Image 1 (cartoon, rainbow, N blue to C red):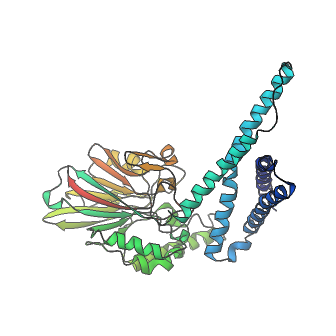
Image 2 (cartoon, helix red, strand yellow):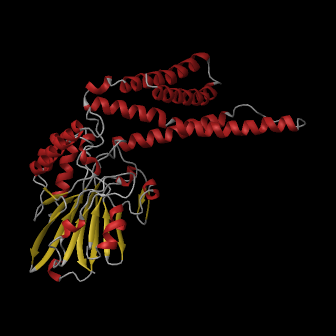
Image 3 (tube, helix red, strand yellow):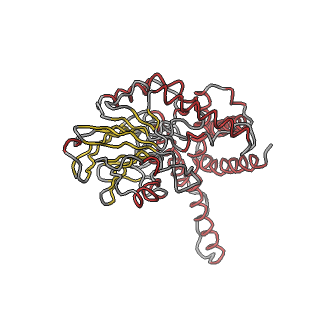
Amino acid sequence: MDPRLLIFIAILLALDVYAFQAVRSWLSPYKPTARRAGYAVFWGVSLLAFTLLILNAFEVTDGWGKNAKMIVRVSLFLVWICKLPIVLLLGIDDLRRGVTWLANRISPVTDRDTSRSRFMAKAALVAGGVPLATLTYGIVRNAYRYRRFAAEVPVKNLPAGLEGFKIVQISDMHSGSWTRSEPLKNAVKMINAENADVVCFTGDLVNSEADEIVPFIDIFKEVKGKYGVFSILGNHDYGTYHDWGHPKGSEEEKTALAANMERLYGHHAALGWDLLRDDNRIFEINGHKIALMGVENWGSAFRFPRLADLPKATAGTEDCDCKILLSHDPTHWDAKIRPNYPDIDLTLSGHTHGFQFGIEIPGFKWSPAKYLYKQWAGLYREGDQHLYVNRGLGFLGYPGRVGILPEVSVLTLVRG
């Protein structure tokens, strides 16, 4: 067994043993039968979780169905994530007890209580229940709860003939995570109800393998735009997160990656989506020209691929009245787009998912994403240029959403 796995299991077991102190303290006034039943439930759930963890580690679950594997991973996540606040509050109580014990040693005149606080044990269990309930709700209720976000984008010197040009943006489908099809049909209806001039998909069609989208092609090929549906690639689309069974950097791995990319290109074609790889399309509308450009992935952080060729993507668009760029990672905007291409009026990105967790109410939004990304959700403006960051249509890792819902963006160009 991998020593790292043993260390990980030891840490989780220590977490369980420590969290059990809250259960034992809470059950202490009850009869022995009730206490034993409570202990059995706690350790029974833990034993089942450890069994599933080991089966997953030894790839026994690889042959299981997609839904079964998802249930295993979600269960493991929830079992231990809910114990973190329990351990935190017990730690605070133990710190209090330690300080009290030390005070008794220094000044024993006053009798101070160093026993475990049953109130803190109850508070710890309640605190553990909050993330369990919240994250479960996010999975059951919010994973496919699509929300329409609409914004007007003022464009400087926009000709009157282009005013009202409507863009629907979707992003980060991560089709390898989906286990249901029916809600996706509702998303397509929602998209098509907008009667958009163009529909734009800004990357991460899959998690790691091209064929993850295959079960959903018949659904999403129904997406329509007046001038077409256009797409780009995201960091997950290049297949580099998948273990292809070959040494890293070997010719065999390169061959597998190339074959995967060819399949992915074919799937975009099967969807009827025009994949822009450092390329552009120019539309003539009411005597004016609007350029839609798309680039390969470019990210400034975490070693994400830096493949975009902006000079190639913008070639031939010099006399266009309005320019829109699709670029998956929003860090591209500040790093390369704004400093070097001030004539790009609007950039559409995704990538962040809004971390799938946060608070979003009228006039206020917060997510841990803000500590990693300057622009992480919604519309941003610097001078005459705009960036819109889509919150994503799918999910990755945690199969749900808390506070930050999956998004269909509706953007309308207006005269700025």
